[in-house]
Length: 257
Image (cartoon, rainbow, N blue to C red; front, side, top):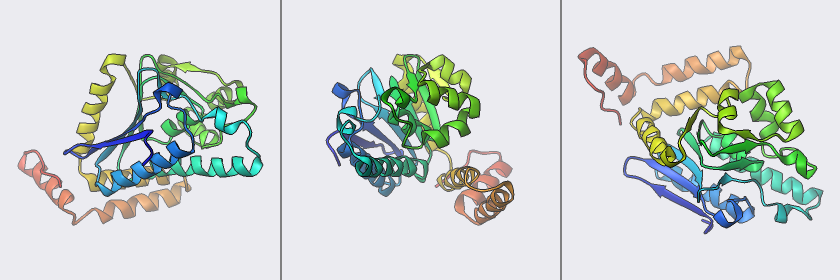
């Protein structure tokens, strides 16, 4: 794993990946992207029940891709870099447990695209978000043109991409870009509590729910409903299904695996 990426996994199964380049506002270069890939694999191997993605320091979640690395790339190099960024974002989106973006500061360009790939986004009141690539003469290249419209709607996404607008945390919440905004000094504790609540949920059912919701972005309604029905039925006979329903009938808290 790169020395710019840290992974911590608690006994409760909460994994935290921290992008640790605060001197560069946690900007993403190739070693850091590979480090995130390795951290995701290690978190999955550790059977993480929930994953938190954040940036080191008080200023930035991820301020974007490293422009000093990109400035002289040719088309072939840019294609390879796009594929690497897509691979990381796709790995976050398909991680077999909920992923929370703890957005503690700037989330621009590729940083915002990583946040878009997460299941939930919690922002500090200091956070500022934007697909700012147009200011560099390019467009979002790690999923922003695809995931952003699905989250905030076509018109808002086009405005953000076309103008490179920055949104503060309050506006991002109103647009549906983030689910919660909390005081900056409360972000870590709030996300830890949220992650703890998710880690206490039945992991198999959460994974199935994530797969079914992700499927809704890939197929038509009929195929998505069929996938949901098969996923729902496939949970019957599992320990958590039996325990959850019996606990309900017994009027007690369930003991999930």
